[in-house]
Length: 152
Image (cartoon, rainbow, N blue to C red):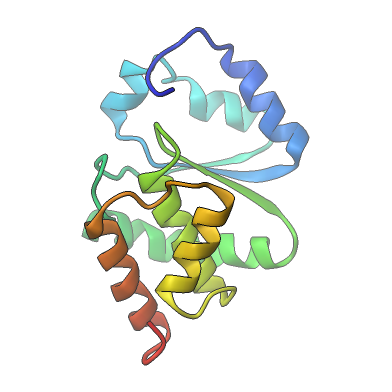
């Protein structure tokens, strides 16, 4: 189910906190936060001691230059924290396309996966149906090649 529905955002963020997440990466565009009535998400997350990062990606699209500029500043911290055992939550509206793509980016950047196909397989194993579009798959091939030349 996607879209707005009767939820208690504080309860949902508390569940993320209870799971032990130290970072929440939100891939929704600002208008989606408003449409879903979760504009208070950054403040609620901060109030729980979780670092919130807003990196908007257009639904169905692959990351663009706008995201990559911000990603380059953030990803080193996320990867270091992930490799030290910290937990990171990455989400979009449906939890498949954008979130799956960024999760695969983290796997590639951390070295947990060397090839795009491996990262895609790992993400889809955890979340069937993830990484929904050809554009997202092609982006991950490009991303893997840029990180691990000859290994995409």
